[in-house]
Image (cartoon, rainbow, N blue to C red; front, side, top):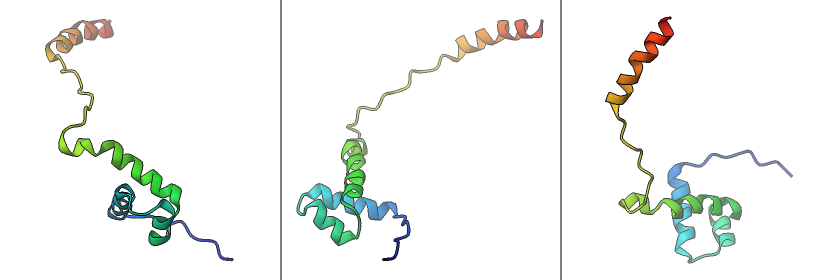
Length: 86
């Protein structure tokens, strides 16, 4: 029995398999056989698609970074530069 070499799949292929898994028409085993893969790998590709699908349409609640107060930072740089020079 020959050992199968590691394969790398394109993002388009992964998305196609994940969308097929999300549709629910076929079982993971049927999809694994159709796309020549492993059922666990299909689950791993499906998870990020289902978790971040809302982000595509702007509905995802992504944590926004607080605005940076440049004046306060510049005010702090002066005294720190003086301390460093001594």
